[in-house]
Length: 339
Ligand code: P6P
Image 1: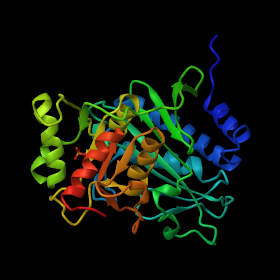
Image 2 (image 1 turned 90 degrees about the horizontal axis):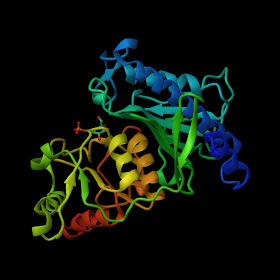
Image 3 (image 1 turned 120 degrees about the horizontal axis):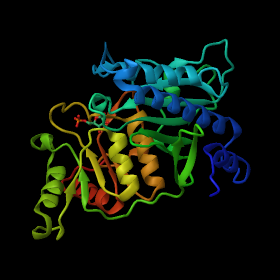
């Protein structure tokens, strides 16, 4: 019988052996993992569970909410508000922060999440996921305010995602590498299946929504044009393309075998820096990618160094294999687009 290491044991050892995470942070991560299990069960029911289709409402970004977006959000809120380790939560699906009700003990952490990323893929049975990020309440803060969340990604204390695909897999960092845990449905627990994930520094695979090509700025067009020229072009090798339109699935592929993922600024919304959200999509994914040896920028600066001004602000995202991300950043610098 191979020695399996559960998520709980992994976290207890991080807490006790490495002294790397305090008990309350361990408990918080375990609660989020249990919520992801419940979300996975709801998703797996699909049409049989009556959970498909639109909820008939819009989120703060003006996007139509699916029933499962709301379900996933409610599962995360309900699972996390009574535990005593959180002060408040922020979600892509909620305009303002959700402060832990007074009837529950207030904790020292802030939890941010995209409860169900990629939900346009739900009806077509393509992998989707939950993305989460944990920050510490600012020392000086008395009663939690939205501004307490406006911390750069470099201040995260935990980040991860759970991908609901052929397997349900939780990928997590607490700042000393990346580990992945696969849900063993017979046991009902997440089991460590890979530790110290590393992303190859080079790749031949790029992920971008090519239908937006005419809207990109010059450095991105230059990079993709060179990839498309293949071995006859300046890169001297052929490239492959993938676009799942579910950030969790595209990032998980990169965590697994390398690649570069790009959702850059484009001229469709010139006043917005990009489509993806900084606080609960780009920041957690950027930290995971960096912890696995990759790089993550907005084309000009490290995503984790971006100082947020608003809770739901967006950002241009270029992340993955280090040497490819650095090439795109170099092209921005050469075009005079530096931070
Ligand atoms: P597009 C899903 O809606 C999402 O936020 C990310 O998960 C994904 O990478 C991106 O948008 C897909 O966007 O414009 O290709 O549909």
